[in-house]
Image 1 (cartoon, one colour):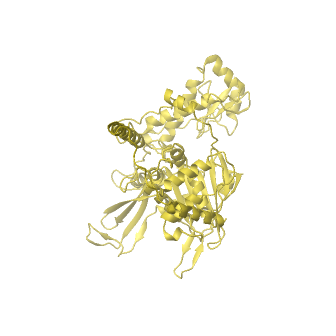
Image 2 (cartoon, helix red, strand yellow):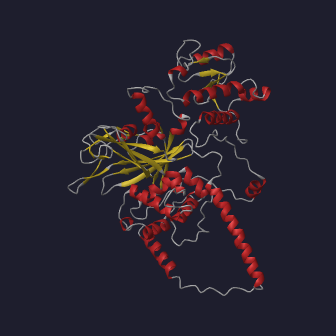
Image 3 (tube, one colour):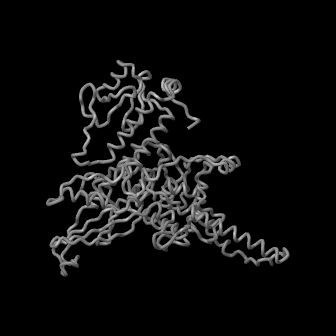
Length: 558
């Protein structure tokens, strides 16, 4: 923040003369009020707070503009906020929802790094106090901004600065557009980026002969380098052929979704911390969620619940509709479905129930939400077709209505009988259910002769990736595209309070083992008088030569 300056000389003068004492308290009060208001989407009537009203037209304000010099709030639609600022010489007002500052002397919205940082700290602090679903009785752990220690500073002084742009195309190695789009979406995944660029897995130190995690580390190194030329992921494709199923091997066109799932499984199997139960590897920490299936017997009311893990959500499209939306697809996905008389046997009734319903819901939201639209339909006569129906999807989405918790609370609210009809409030800030779009995969053409492209967001800019061609684009172009897969990242990540991260504990444990290993080596050398170990006989390198031949063969097809 030290390198940034304010875009407005008037806010600079205000902060330098009064040290912000005149507007800081009011600014924090407005931002905190908005967090408290949005935390409970549906509050009980006895606790409901009436919305603020415009000081001129008395309009109820869903997005008030608050003056930072007095206690008044005004509407923006009719220009009353600007009128008040000019008539009273109150220079600054703030949008309570976004924290954006308006200067009447500049007659424009302005940016100030100090107030921007204050806005972020205030929002986080207010949301911490609103969070009420911790695993322990402690409140949410306070956020502590990172500041470099002496050790970090000395390490950064000797480090080489490298560009971090990730706008590098990938060479098509022969109908490998399906591979390129998936790799671009993984490269632009912020959680995977932080993992691999944070040196959590280093291919130089890995002891596995064939490791997909090492190939991902190499890919991140290449894409985030200063080389602008397109990169050919030959070693990644070679590793895929060696470890994946036979269906994904060869030069035939493949389905991007199938390759995406296969790649996640391969990274999981070679990643540090990989287990079959309660896995905490980077793949499950990033993509893993839980689906809950509730089967209800309409005769006796007995409900049987099943919880299944998932890495993505596949949504069906209605081809007979002129237009689908992501929200509509999710509503259909979580709607109750009638079961046949032979599909369910109630354990309480001890016989088949002719009236039973099944309903899916999201029990646990993943940090990164990957959604696939089922555009390829397999028919009974062995003929397949592609559904080209457009799907409207947003740049951000609230997933709360599709979670198990909220859906059960909604049923209680809409039910009849004693204890029913009580309005509910989301447990914790609504922002914990918000997701932002960061990548989209499109399929152009038909099933047999189609082509994959993708869009990805780098910081606040969107880019279109068509194999080795990378062009700048806009968010409107992304949202107008015919999506096959969408990737959303959670706006606020969950964490367990007052616990040391598992990767920190694992790193400390490995460092302890390394120190013990070095100590034993010194003791062994001291006892042996420093004698050199006998040379190790190395084979003829047939496996390495074979790998090189396969990579050369891949390049020959380009």
